[in-house]
Image 1 (cartoon, rainbow, N blue to C red):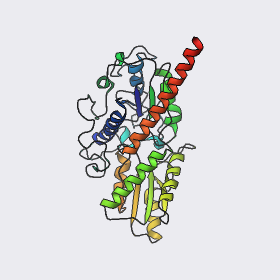
Image 2 (cartoon, rainbow, N blue to C red):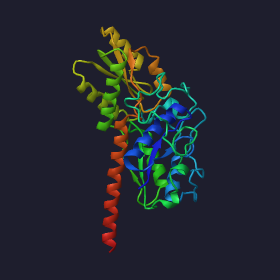
Image 3 (cartoon, rainbow, N blue to C red):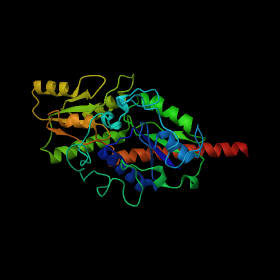
Image 4 (cartoon, one colour):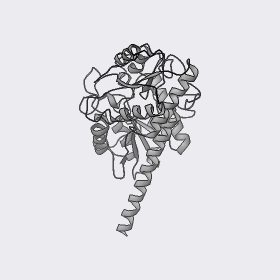
Length: 339
């Protein structure tokens, strides 16, 4: 069954390379190369990616590159989604998602001023592996994944590559799937609240402490932030679970946008309380403006974004396999009734 990852998209090479490493890891685990569909103006759009696999589109047939349709990108300032509203809680890093709100060092694979840590990078050899076609971001283009005409048109699995359950997860992506998908399409839950995210966060922190000066005595849990009810729920749950892994170490949740406290406010509060070595744990998927702001915040260490951690690939695979199994059971029930 085909797999489509619904992402914001980015013109930044570092962000595309991060998602590309995730695609590599998922393909190694499943034998299925994910197709990446973007919610912003970058092609292929999510609707185009869905149409490429389903062989049809609300506006008519689409080609494998998904160029027959685009998703409303909002205004030129970088809003995105079908309503033109950005929910930062959904973002890999909203500052990078449109490629218009700031820039990172294109030579950085992680947005923290250096190469990805080989201990937990998906594939240190390249952004997307070898022998595959990529677009300008290094993310897989449907045209290079496989011939959609050779795939089963019975359906596909769509996994939202989002850490929050805000507007994009609850409104935007379901609307695109309803408009451009077909019979048998399955939309999975986002990454929010999953135990694999907890494992990735803990792994990133352990690696950072091992390589950047030792254990911290306080943690700022930095997430994108959302003003939408429930949009910060996954982040708050992940922060509580991280605190449970670190008894005696204060963990303060802070936000890069939409609500407070801000990351600088949380850092200042912990410094005022007497903490001498403070780490920022990054609850973001890929490099961008938000990760750049965390690097500049003045903490003693900042962990890497999460998308190319092995545990996130495990989560995407779990979402995919559970959805594919459910679709298979439903198809068998329908066939039995028809018989």
